[in-house]
Amino acid sequence: MYPTLGDLLGVSLPVPLHELFVGLGVIVGAVVVWLQVRHHQLRDERLLYVVTGALVGGALFMRLGTWLQHVDLRDNASLAEQWVYGNRSILGGLVGAWLGVHIAKRLTGYRPRTGHLFAPAVAAAMAVGRIGCALTELPGTPSSLGVGPVLDTDTAVRLGGVAGVPLHLSLVYESVFHAVAFALLWWWLRDRLHRPAEAFVLYIAAYGVFRFLVEFVRGNEVVWLGMTRPQLFLALTVPLVLARVWWLWRHGRLSPALPGPRTAPSQEITA
Image (cartoon, rainbow, N blue to C red; front, side, top):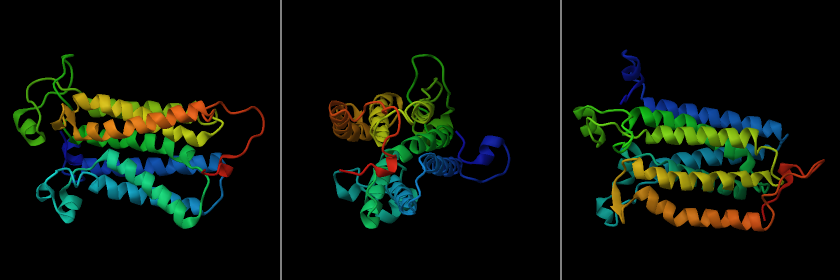
């Protein structure tokens, strides 16, 4: 794997590759939000604070989301150690971004739904960011397909994987999932839902199910009942999101957009 951009290119260039792609993902996501704001002709300046809340909340929870991972609190790192050296959690980042949006809305009094702005942006950002993960982290578990990257002994020891056998490209699978999700959200669902903000719920539900399944080939530590920590988190939260999808469907909130003029997304007020 390639810790720095120089390692990837074979030159002396000590730019952390993971952080580089995370930064590129954030930029791509911000551009998509801006394009969505223009597409839906939203002009409320409070949206800037809402987007800032998403970015700040996502950054905080991405870094601190795996802090309390041990039942015995003495086994957990200090907050300072977690911030500097801790794992970065995509699931934690999503939760933090969601909380950041709602806190920003509460502080600014902005009530319209914003899921249609963030769903394609998050998908695009994740598709890019996961490339950095795929280039720097453990690819996955041994693959029965007989194809995939093969780690040498030193790299396997450093990443905690298995050497000398093809491994699943689990992080590439995720990047492809998010790229496909972005395409669907941008070119298919963008103006098809009567309540476009619900696209975010559909995206999160789909990702939750996909992530639970892909964890079986990720190579993360199995901690309880044959499941990893992300799977345990998803086992609790995905049913809630799927219940929300069912409720939306039962109440007609996932119906196609009506022909002709309709209420602009900026006027869809949170219940």
